[in-house]
Image (cartoon, rainbow, N blue to C red; front, side, top):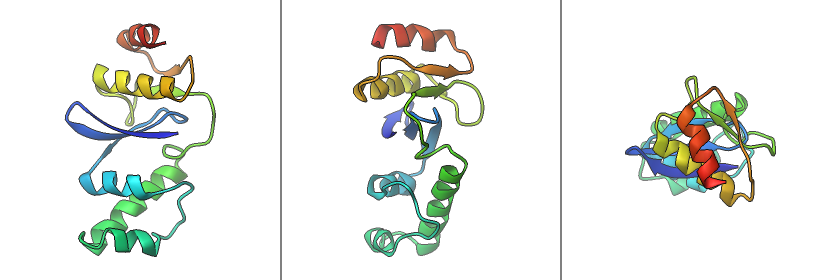
Length: 130
């Protein structure tokens, strides 16, 4: 499940199935609020109309990036077991991001999470939240 939140001054899309933390531009954040999975290879016309105040090339480029993340299994990923990336390109960058993601997982009704990588603070936060 994809959760959108603000942490550390950034807009983030967190996918609990892949564990990825994806920083979003203002346009990508607005677009994420209007999208439903799975994304089609071509940007829907209805989305283009909804985002008409933005440059059409920016809309296309942003949609292509989000679609690419889906194809790479980082966004709208399949799976029921929640994860948190703690290392790598799409890892959490702060304790605030980790806490937001853990709260989102708890709100999904889950009571545990697996970590991809290690972070002592993440394990402590998980114990506090769950």
